[in-house]
Length: 91
Image 1: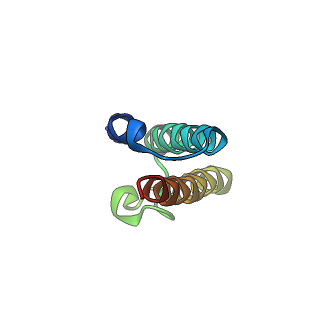
Image 2: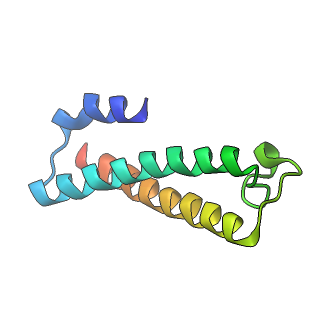
């Protein structure tokens, strides 16, 4: 859904082509990483460390929790950057 919304506002952005490429890449990275990370959480039955409400009492192995933590933190940073660039481009 987020990518659809980005597609609707994309023609309104006033950004250099290089910035648009970064925006596109970070948006894809963030949304796909979100999908893959939450899929791994469901498969592994882990994620209580980073998502206590969704994970409940399901704690995975240390390496599983590490992968989940890295995925969620990296997608969060990417999506904050995407949001800032998006607002800046619509000025």
